[in-house]
Image 1 (spheres, rainbow, N blue to C red):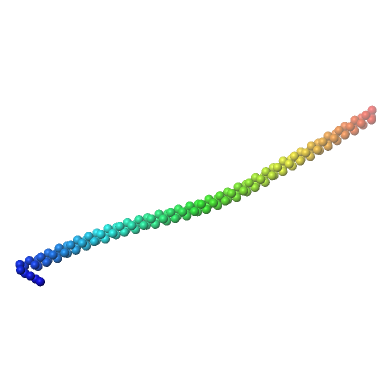
Image 2 (image 1 turned 90 degrees about the vertical axis):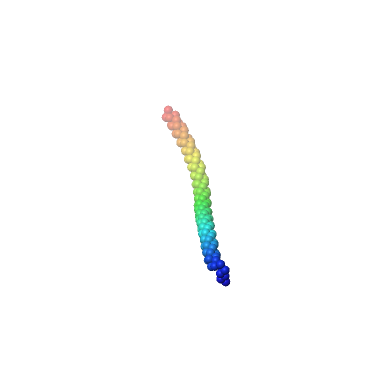
Length: 138
């Protein structure tokens, strides 16, 4: 295949090889840049996915905190309701004790009035007896 009509065949082949080698190097460099850009995009996506995963975890934690707070609020409300019922029962018992005390006081006052009436009757009787004794002496 060496056709040496004018002797330019070998330098022309060498030049073609250099040109092919340069084109291959340029193509390799182009693919290296594309691969680097793809790695950067992949890393960016990986970081974005990690951010999304962390946000989901934060939402999960917030939801768990809210659930715990809701449960604590429910328990506090139940405790307050029970305390309210106890206070109502205690208030009712105190009201009944006051009513009983007022009735007992009224009964005691009524008994005192009855005793005063008896004492007054006895005084009248004693005066009457005293008057009769005074009349009999005269």
